[in-house]
Length: 211
Image 1 (tube, one colour):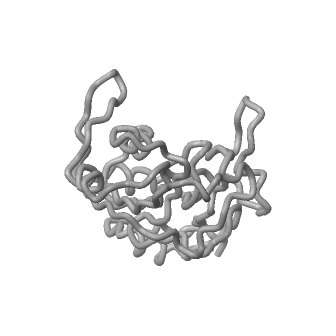
Image 2: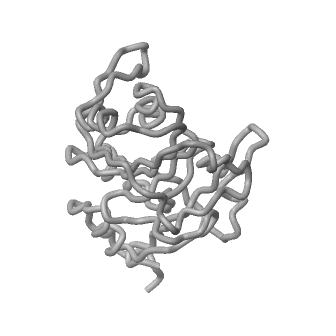
């Protein structure tokens, strides 16, 4: 446990699990993972039910503000599997920005981003639940964003007329998913956690541990 008493975790959120501990619906929850999280643990920056990969969990309520509400944007990188073969011209469209529909029915041109066609990384295993027909034509893209509109990556894939079959967040700044298996949990020391996320304006709170 850190000097502040807070704890920090990353998980590899599996497909078909919501980023919550409580829900009125009959869905798979974070509490179904094989790990005893401390009281007060919550997710930072949700992944939707069908998305996979890096999700931060912590008992520190200040992290959301420091990470997602700061003036300094933080990079988030996703591996995306789409139907059919993506051309280099299409990748360049993504890099420059594409038009998506956001909340309120407003058209939004996405901020220029990093995007490239990649080979499927060796550490990305086929889904055990709801497997995909990977023998059919498809492409893998690596996309890094500094903004996070609702379902932005999926909407960007629709804008280039490629259906998103699989969406995996692999990093936030230098905090990486690595080879953590689906459903896996890794605890990270407080100072290292903030260093990897490139959050410089945090200060550990006075110790709340018994003296």
